[in-house]
Length: 212
Image (cartoon, rainbow, N blue to C red; front, side, top):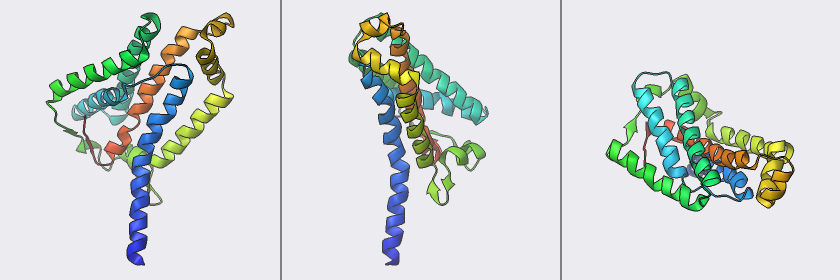
């Protein structure tokens, strides 16, 4: 019986570590798909932001500033993709898939396919807040629940959720109603890229970032 309890506890802990990854990947795509677009660049985007974060950590920069810089990189990538899709009238499927391969190749060349250890943040406040435990359970799941709640409220109760639905249903009608269709289209990719980067808290749990 004791072995069964231990096994079930380990299974729950494993699920609480891996499930947030899927949550942070899927939930932002609700906004993107509802708006009539798709984003397939998230693996390399997350790797790019994580690479910047780990490099800055190795330079001795405080983790909080490294996180802000990495989010800035993610936003920059999202803006570039959004501008190409919205103003270049390129399919989001083609554009994001192309960015995925481009960034993947760039990171592979720069890192030579090696993972980057960041033991500097192990057992620190930054690590414990993002990848620690709460009552013996991984705290990542708590962040994932908060993220789901926030997204549900934005999608159903905030004007941005209404704009997303209108843009996805009929962009021409949304434009005539005064909705900034192009801005909303760009915001899809900014939101998706930054949400993918939140997955790095699972890598922080093991104190390394395996870039690809």
